[in-house]
Image (cartoon, rainbow, N blue to C red; front, top):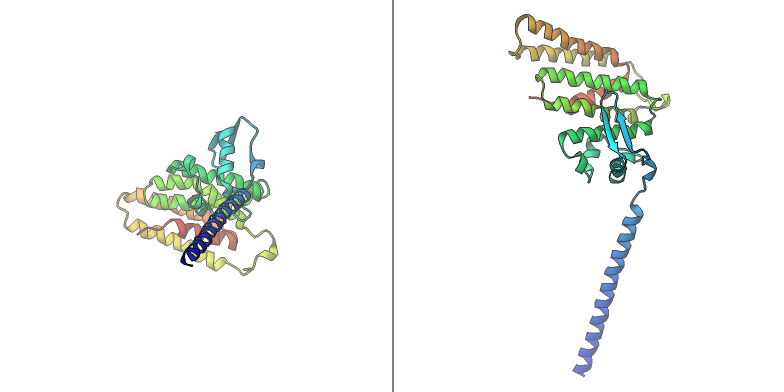
Length: 253
């Protein structure tokens, strides 16, 4: 009787083990199928040219051979998402940074990001808004670059601005009915511009690198950057974008 019980338990255990292994194999097969199905085909963005040159609004260019460019298309599906992430998130969430690994490589990433998102947004359609945003962000970068007497950060930012500007174009309300804040922003803008001028005055008080007439001229030049910002910030959208860019990327103690 005991022998019969042992045989029965052995057969039951063997069946369970076989069933368990079968389930595992099925899970592996299913997972592989899901991963294969989820891989997005972005080959429509491939280039047929032997060399592709990406010219930016800042006057510099990126050059890629066909194989290298098409490899970027394959490795970076984040460039083609229906709802793109901002360039900082896109870069840090990317699993493929081989060609964009260095600081200079990261600069190029933001420019390539802008290149593809620009096509989604509309190259000619938003050319004016794009230029205005690039000018606004460049003025903020220059202002803080002068405060800190330069540094590699500001040089890298000058190129990455293209990615930030293009993402801002994506966020731009496309229709009048998309704009909820229709109130007059003149007072808010005035306060923001005053805060920048106050910042110039405060920075000047602790600046002992430039003295006398040179400091007076330096202060005038810095205020010219603020004058330009005052001219460029024409509505709520640009005011909010410059504030986000300023407070999100330039914090010093």
